[in-house]
Amino acid sequence: MAFSRVVKLKMDRKGSAFRINEISLLPRERGLPAGRQGMRAMVLVDFLSDSVQRWKLMNKAGIRGYLYILIAATLWGVSSVVAKSLFNIGLSPALLVQIRLTLATLTLLVILLLFDRKQIIISLKDLPYFLVLGFVGVAGVQFAYYYTISKIQVGPAVLIQYLSPVWIASYAFVFQREPLTKDKMIALLLAVLGCYFTVGGYRMDLLRLNRIGIVSGLVSSLFFSFYALYGEKGLKKYSPWTLILYGFGFGALFYWILISPMKVITGGYSFKIWMAFLYIAIFSTLIPFGLYFKGMERIRATRASITATWEPVVAGMTAYYFLQEVLLPLQVLGGIGVIGAIVLLQVAREKAAPPTPIEIRQSSGP
Picture (cartoon, rainbow, N blue to C red):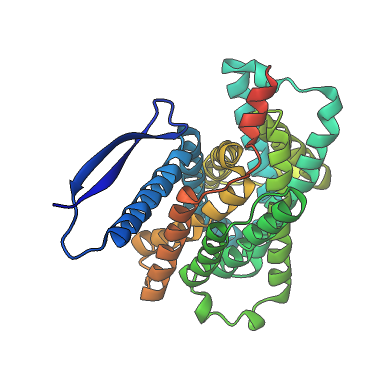
């Protein structure tokens, strides 16, 4: 009887390498030449090795990073309807940004004063960084996005906003030498196309939309890209909540300079409106942006921005379940595309990826 060798692989305890655990002899299948049987065994071993290596890359920090981004995108997707309803009663985008940033900053400041005062401390030499983060990144992305959805519908506004993964991936590839692998390019394409179908882009005549709204949407995507990449730089030294505190704080200061505080104080808003303000400040601003940064420090800006395309999927499902809007088959297909992009990102392998911000911060020590 003819025999064939079977190689069994076993991962070492630290999960850092493979080693041959056992070589055994099994009866060779009848009618299959020894050479072809050996080639099949080698292909099987290579496939198993590659699969295990991919799952090894999904360490706890990476999984938590994706979960943080998905939760943030879910909160953004649910809350977009609330903001649109406030614009429909005549509230200006700038005023809403001013209120949400102020309430979010004050809430976070109180929490850090009570539970973690160390995160309030920053180096004075980094003050210019936080000024740019607040005045340009935070103030810019908040106003541009809300101004866009005040001019055009939420669907096309979200679609244009989520061109940002393209800008972020391109910048990271050119200037940060971050690998743009085949898997990542496929995930990026799936995410953008998924957003297009999810928000019903195939039913929109983009050329007939408000041109100012389209331009502000493109500007919003650029602001968000800057905010993510510039924020990623700060995460190499500071925690997400420190960046959020000062970024939101300086962003709020920027709007207090532009808009008199008396306009808010004498606005005569009802209790219901103030509850909507508070909801947007906490569940559409403080928590999701904080979680987005916590996720980005673990999986970097490119992967975070692609994963955040989950937001329009949530927005579509929310409209379907709570607003009785129709969810068409192509929209469902778009959602599946976004989910596929996120799953592909989790198992995609990069041979020479730069370290994540949290790895850099931990390696530098206190």
